[in-house]
Amino acid sequence: MTPTTRMTVLPMVIGVAAGLSALNASAVEPCGDFGECKVLIETNSTDGDVGFHFLVDGDDLRSLVMRAPNNGRWLFSYQVYGPLRDQRLTEVFAESSEPLCWFDPEEEPDEVVTLADFLERWEFGEYRFLGFTHRYHRVQGATVLSPLLPAAPLDVELDIEVDDEDMGEEPELDYTVHWAMAEPGEGHLGRCSGIDDGGEIFDNGLYNAFQAMNGDIFTMVEQPDSWEIVLEPDFNDDPEEASAEEIGLAMIYNSHVFSTRIAGNSEELAVEIPDEYIAALPPNTPVKVEVGAIAGDDNATFTEAADFCANPDDDADSYCEEEDEDEDEDEDEDEDEDEDNED
Image (cartoon, rainbow, N blue to C red):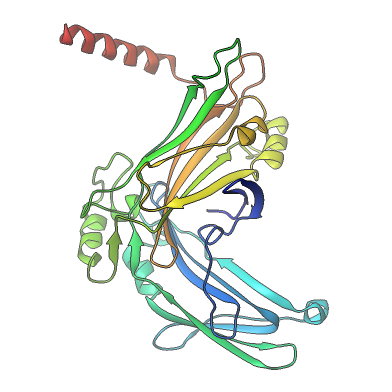
């Protein structure tokens, strides 16, 4: 996931915060001489990609090194110069690239990093941060990359329904994100574990490797510590496909992201999107939703669903995906057949 500006909802408060992906809404604990630090794994079960993220926050830093568990190998370092040296640096947040973890026919095989390859590259254990302040004081701290990986949220959907309390000529719509949690022992990481969006195994090699590692190298967690729910505008910003007007809308609205978290043990796995947020979007805004399961010190697994339309308006220009009339007719025919069979 790309860092974006997320609208984070707290009790009685709607605010705008800089998104740090899975880090953005959780507190990260003190880390030795640093104010905070964190390392985590983020998986996208829908697209089938996986990445390593880290954050460290200190006072007036001029240099920093991150070291791997066990062998202490340098993984990241920086040194500030010129005006940045005079101004000094505090927080550093970085995401690795997020290569595919499954063998997409359109992707070069050597560009794929399977889950097994990724976990061999990024060891679980203690990652150490070492640095120097502008006064050459040595600072250090450590944080742990947890082997607890949250299972992918299932059946992610955005329900758009007429508000029962508003039945005027132009009734308001309610937007509610729904999802389901994997049953104990049945959790997976979507495409990274060889399972497609429909829950079917499409790559036995990836699936068998996932099964062999689960419980040995990592532990799959079906019940997360928290859920992160995201809704974001999805205007096309590809200059080869989109019009200048749509690219302009993408530049304005695609960074206006709604995001909130709820407890992992919440009885109802559903979140209603605030009316104020939806009202701020233009007519016929294409939107997508993501639900993330967060566990193991902020390791995150996200599942996406797309092609929804917010603020539908027949009289305004639309950039939403048009429904396939043939598919609608087929669905109606199937419903009629089911009713006939019941009769």
